[in-house]
Length: 304
Image (cartoon, rainbow, N blue to C red; front, side):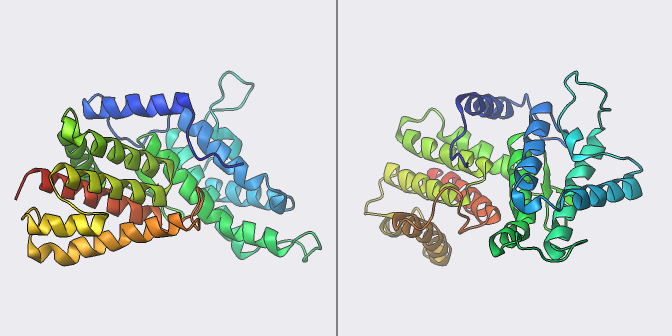
């Protein structure tokens, strides 16, 4: 069962986290806290507990064990991702070993997707639906992992090649997001835009790219309205901004491309084709739009 929204406790945690980030009391790091570990363990369990993986469990475990021993000289299993919390005698893994385990888990899923019948002939229970689940598992796991890492301020991203790499664009993220939220905060005329932009950031962290793009577009519309632009919809508002000299004529191609991306997502959602779990746009697309909109908000608020 997929839940679209976070529960109260997680919403409050993220709110406090954002406030501490803005105040300079928190920093991004490469460390996995206990809550992140619990969620990462659940991400693995959610994938591999499906019946499609029933006959693949031993193969996945052996593949991960081989990778961990060969590369890290440590036998770390997926169950060790969850912190021990006083339970019997499971040795806690180091942070580096746990990050290596994430890579090994993704590579094992990639291997299984390429070899779904490894060690056994095709059997009646392996339906086309189950084969599709196995095939989709690496990307589903990767997206979930990256959403968890971002929500717990871990500045690493799991790529399709099964490697965790530093989020090189974190400096841009901090500069754009912090500057945008600081600019909007406390100014009554921008209150609605601030709410919409914060919604976009939450959707981004929750791993819903279409929603993040839609909310970013709404924030941009609210900013343009607050600055005196007129019109129905983003296209007319951007034209009004050009006439009012908030945007230069030379910006037409840029604003047109941004408008088309945002309005395409809105059109798809309005026709009922996009739902909470769909990914018509990837997270990288949403990241780009949210940050470009943030940078544009900063520029628009600064005046002509």
